Length: 360
Image (cartoon, rainbow, N blue to C red; front, side, top):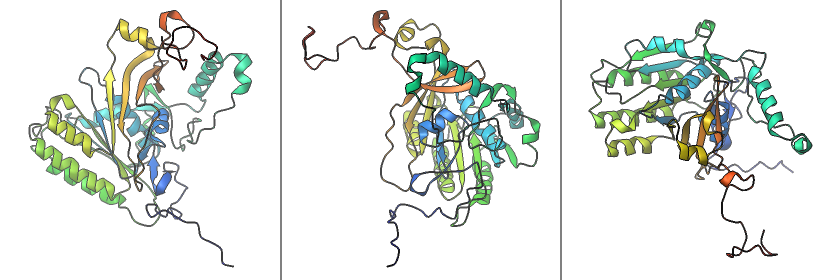
């Protein structure tokens, strides 16, 4: 009897020929491929990272440049993986931004040891036996340069040897009268990573910072910017690359901002936390360690009609030891200093305030 073939969904792609020797790529569901965002926690939240062929848009906060943290880690991860990079910004010298990229964590595994110590302090010893070692599906850093996702030290610049032998292209859009030249540069860059049925040898990354900055001459031409993003998304869909674009929605009209958000495959936003906010400090635990909030509005989903349902959509941005970028779920602080549930109302089935035998 002939061997039966496994039934494959019509939305799935055959990825058996995709080489697994490239550590910068990761297999995802329904035939998708991921590249890392450069932040291990963000990769876990998104289900593996950024999907190849997707457009990621980050809404900036006018009060704080927290979007720079996401952009720097994304670019550093690509350089460590030897993936070609195209960076565009409204600055006059965009190459100077490369000097601010965070450094790879040393092979000694400083962060992993710190996380282990904090976890030991957080969990009482008598309950530790009930918690096994976490099984991560991502090859997070052990200090190696060939992991899928690495940790980066924000206080140290990236070593210069990561820039050697890698195609790094920097474009200034400050004095450009329109987006035609940038579109041509992006099209030429993405043409090197055209998608076919063969193996994926490498992936590309495009990072565009402050796309709608008022320093650009085209900042008042909203329809021109929308047309550029629409064409850029089409180019990305037929390539093995990921495009990350940050833009300030406060400088755009509400209709233009909504259209940009709608065209994004993955939509994120960052927000600064005001200093000494007493109400927020009472509401959230670990408020003193937070520097901002990350909101996940949309997650890219290819080759399927099933939407992504996240357990949480808002996460706190923390700098552990002022060096490592960490994302955590928001936890509500206990009410009135109690150590029990953070909610003031009881969790019983009945609506009565008296404690009965059936209340739990």
